[in-house]
Image 1 (cartoon, rainbow, N blue to C red):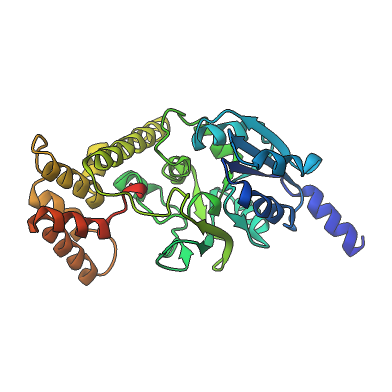
Image 2: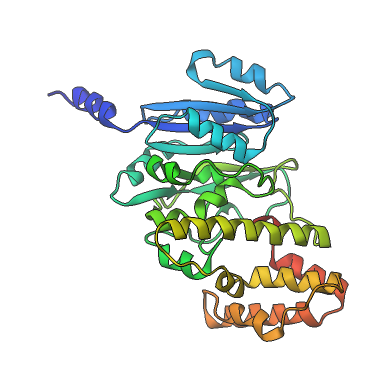
Length: 341
């Protein structure tokens, strides 16, 4: 058997990867996104472009790819709606949801597929370089070391957002996992569909990190969801708390289906960011009960990291509590990003 015959055999035996491009009015970025998938040396790949009711030139861009992509044109329903529809159209054993304003670097699909072929792995995540049109701290996402391995106990202990994760375009999922949790509830339009997958994934299997270098690019721009921090207003605080409750409800449902006994009340007590949101809500609205000091500081003192870092965090939270309201809001804005709760 020649080397080329072996290569053809390996490609034929490799599981199909479905790359679902999620697009809404990102026509100016869409071509680079699709081209980055077409350039991957990791056949077989199917590309599904879900256009979620765009009103720009996205349709013309998609049409220019003719039979190279599967086009799904639908009325605007939000990212979760687009993810549900894209998964329903897909056939791959490995599924990547790729935001249309981001793009893949060479080797991304191969790395994901290799990771998900390992026994027990349900999620693969990679680092992303940040290409920013707006002020942005740091050069890659996640900025901290991404979590890997068996994280189920940590998720059961701490609840939503308990481990460091790459954003949407830095993930690939096993179809067996997605089949257990999709479709996601489309009425949750303020919640990122990616986090609704990240939260329960460790309960179903391992998380892999197949490469130390960045294998995708995250584009930060003024029309992107995460281009800026949400202002700390009473309305935004309420929205952030509601998003956390929605995440906790779905995570608890998944955990219960697997025979676990989740404790959402404990998740709240262990989350200093959520408690900070609740504290600020009480300061901005006299009708809300205040969070006790010890309850607020305890999760900061038990957070991951070195002792000096934990003490500095607890001190910062104490300052948020005792500073004048305007100063407290400004300081809290440096500690938490409401869009990520």
